Image (cartoon, rainbow, N blue to C red; front, side):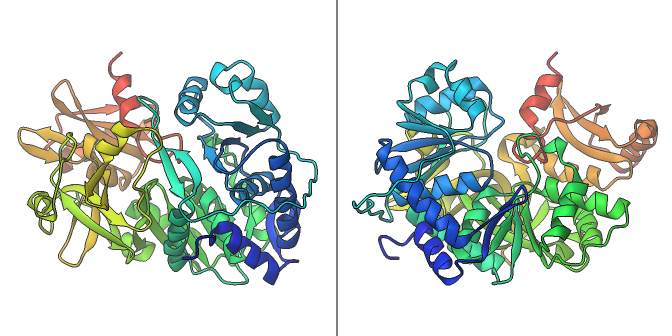
Length: 510
């Protein structure tokens, strides 16, 4: 890879080939590749005039929009680092993130800039700008960017401890794009609805048109499927890349209202598990689309891939090895190692081999590859806890539990920290979640260890069916000590899909 070859170069190349093609459609406004490239260049000079330089870290607190991508590409163009935090984090967590990265500048919408006046850590940031800019030009050449420069810093999900800042260089982004492009296989006539922000960057680099969904990821439950369906039809969208929650809500609306969506050719979803019953729903709603589920994490995306047709046919049984997530991506290497809450101190390949498990044995999933993150920003403890270094080679500990079968097919059994040790026998809440979701009248369910009892926690679609569900579970499962029904099982704020075990445990502490 050439030192200067990055997303800005890819975007410039796409803009040169198709200057009049729609790059982004947002709130009924369309910007072409050519116009966006011109605005990116003007914004680059504007940032330099405001004192932002190569190597500076810049907090970007702007929702998904044309402005967001203009700002990010301009920062990349001048060699600055764009820093992102999730929209739903608390003010306290936002300040903790600020302490970790020590940004020189902040770019945010009016509400955030107003809030920054009341938060000491944000108030310390010397340069605070809005999303608008004044067109600026200069005879000076812009700084050159090389592959080892840091492009992005993003914070992984978590509300306690020192924030974990994932540090992505331009080289890392390039290899991640390369891996994802092999899966997505973008076409010239693709019109994508990318709800996952990183995918819109890929679209800009490959010349695909992006339609930003009328959806606020910070408030997933406010999703209005009819608005999304209207966008899909209005703009002739033929590809969707989104979280399972997004696809599920839109699919339910399509099926329940007998709506026909014929223009969607491909759907890619990731960021949270998809169970066989959900796969059936996706197929029913989008029966003409190829639908694939990508398994990965902040530090390694993609890891594996499975087609919904293959997943749909999986038999659901709590005694099975877990949720099938498919074949390992060709650009990544994977091992299953012994589960431990300790840091691994491994000095050689032989030592790694000693803790590596055989086919069909369940343990922690670790991965290595060019698109596997090997660095956190200013967090040595996170590095020791999540990485295994053998010389220059870095293995990432995903924290996920699973197994590989004889054909190198990966199965998930959930987070390692959620595994329950029941008198020497390990129980996976994840396999129970798969089983519960397959049951009639159950919206969601899992198991927890409550007062030394293996307890099923169930969220119903219809609370009048409580006794029916209770009896069905009792008839089919003899490992549970108790069954509890609650109104709502807490989900993760990012995708509103994964069960938040920490919050769930706190419910029963009171």
